[in-house]
Image (cartoon, one colour):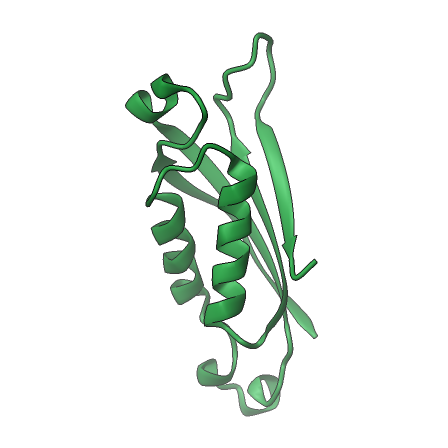
Length: 119
């Protein structure tokens, strides 16, 4: 096994429970740690046999910038399932989503959630 990490992928989206979050939108940051079964990819040095991270980025982008989710947990879960579905070489997807402007009555850098699929 080996791990492909995509860190701090940034997207503008409109997720959240409050109407203002949908109206204003904000930036979301996504990390993906994908544990991959190497199959013949490492020996063959073949992109066809591994996870093309450019394509994986587009899958993440499509989901994060698409349909509004109230929970970033649900958003991370959807990203993890889609990546495992689209790339059968992925044995495990760990998706972290950070929301820097979470509507919290206090000072914090961001709210972050991590989902692992399959569990």
